[in-house]
Length: 237
Ligand SMILES: [Zn+2]
Image (cartoon, rainbow, N blue to C red; front, side, top):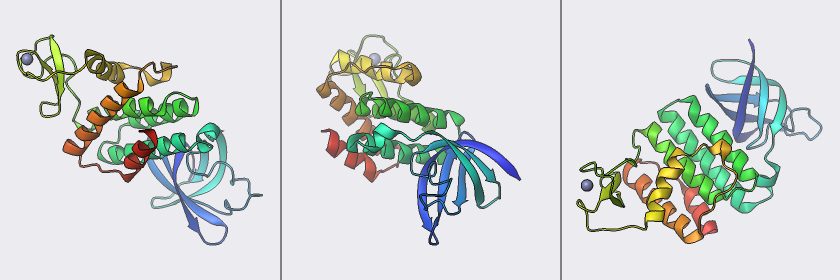
């Protein structure tokens, strides 16, 4: 059966001399597709079957593995492919989103990934975009941070974000303190519509504090360990 799917190439594997097998993430799952002859520059499917390519794929659908008929490239993320920081941020987000998607196949995860890749390609601060996605993804893992009020008593007078309580704490419930700017940004990152974001006005040291918390939170609760995050962090810090 011929089917059209819109998605992002998240993996390429060489297959025979001139072909490759690609994996494409879509709103409705991940497809494995044989792209015959796609390694050949002259082949019409050469463009559109590379890592990160976002396109509309026309496939002969099959349960285990489909076959590519044609692809219309929508976005190749040209700026990203030329920049080591952007490519490492995007690679990390692809890997992270796949892990979360495998646990909770919610179409919003695909939408979030696509928006993030577009923003990174459009010169929005990569670390900021990465952290926004990481915070938003927690919901799909059942690990959403409590960013409304104190996680213990419900007070609004928040002074700290706790790894142990997965959320804000107030001055009655802890002696620890965190910069209010950092605290508010967690909420803002969680609420913001990534599609509408055109600038992230946050200093580098504040960003790194946020990143450090998120890293520790993922490490403590998610069981997701990604080498690509380490690589990205080495480039950013
Ligand atoms: Zn409290």
